[in-house]
Image 1 (cartoon, rainbow over the protein chains, first blue to last red):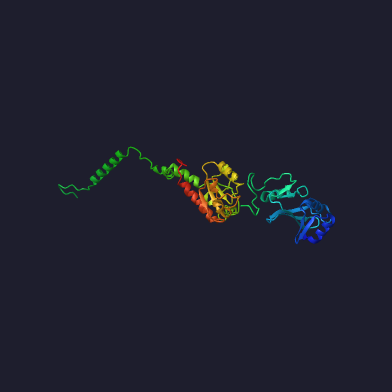
Image 2 (tube, each protein chain N blue to C red):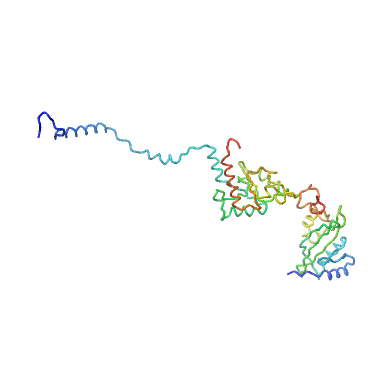
Length: 146
Length: 197
């Protein structure tokens, strides 16, 4: 069974290694500063203590005040799991850095989030609609859709 | 013993004369051979000639051998598969094989939710089927969009994109329901005319 890492301790370690990257710790997840996401991702993937080499899931939640993008990470080497979140307060053009070059699995998942939530992933090689058709107006999983 | 003035009817002589007369009559009447009784030879043929209409014959052939098209879009497909498998066995209706190619199929059973992204493919496959062709909308979603009718991504009813012959309601309908729908298609085919379609 995969061991879920203690967020407090990982957040403490992240604050030591990459000062200022952690916004807060919500019990099962660590909220990361949006512009520092790629740094944190690269650290968690590359550091031999963690080696989070598998992105199990990438999704987004609309809290009306802000969007939250959620990353479910798994380390196949250590059998660890961890949840990262980033927040995005702009409703007109919410932008989050893409992690496609760090985890290939993010490709379609980011496209799906872009399609249904309208979050733009900066640096994505092929950011276009995945489930809906080209020319569809709006992003239907947003709370204010319809 | 002879009585005068009264010739006995059956004297020995008369019996001979009468016999000779019968023989002579038969001989004269039997100059030609009697034809062999051969009318039984045509009986087999008579049993195999039916008088009917072209419409009836064509419709009979069409309705007893419908080739359905594989078309599972959502959960209704499993009821369709159950209908085709051994327990419900639509081979009883001459529908042994589900065809993968629309060009070899007569009946499109649209089983499940149709999304707008899938809709062009459904329409294209319908258009690829050769005439004559029939369509069953199976389940609430294919009939009207079902639970997802108000959704941004679901077609609110198969009849928005292709003409439908029979609607089979249910969520999903049981195989018996689908078989009833197929029987209705048979009835519809029997009532058609090749003159007008």
